[in-house]
Length: 348
Image 1: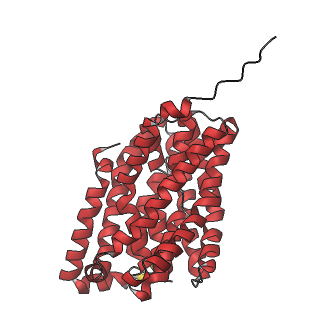
Image 2: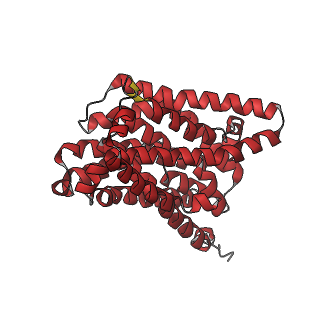
Image 3: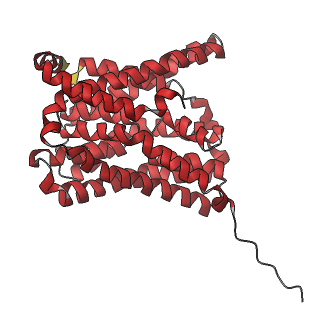
């Protein structure tokens, strides 16, 4: 993990301060930026999101899907957690904590929007950062690559329907046209462009791809931070008026991370997978593709919405929480690898 990635939470915190300060000093400028949109898609934010997402998708080799069968049990656990447990558990946690327990402490007009943001956050499995987490737990590189590639392919067709289903179950109005546009703009088109660019770079030699990834990595992170400055420039008044909002929104996110990581880790042990498979499986089940979530929330509900703020909270706590999961996975390696001794039959 690079120094920049290790201290991502610090940079996010500085962006929060900078965004709130700039929004207060230059409200007219931020109003102009907010008005630069077409079909509810903010053009400056859309450009920044592409700069975030495409370099991350560029790392994905769809050819690795041929290796999925080698670890079918670990892949099955990953898919179960990411698509059958994670979004639905977050919807339940959002309703329980934001819609019920914390309701008196939150702005009444943003409750549904906060829940929507949490659902969108959980519906997008992590992509690029999984490679970082997997390396820290000595995960199998081929398994990590194949599970990320498979999740990205599934995300092309499943992200929109799952978000629409859960928003509908939560009685949140679904802007169908905007949702379809968001999926196309932030999932389908970037994925296609990334694969075309990847093939072109590889045709010139693997070193060209490696060099491009090194150059584009910092660009992706800087685009993320610039997006956060814009978001908090718009969200500043709400945050100042409700300083507890970020803390309260982090509660269901934290519970969801540890719940899904523990479930994936335990299930892999039950089905007999090795630790180098269980580690990455648990980590992809715990983390989120927050760049996509932020973009989708902005498109669906607006820059100043509670949904956008909820997804940003996911960015804020991602790195320290995931590092704690990495520590748990590493320290429990001995327990994981201990298997019950086979029963000895008395020959007499």
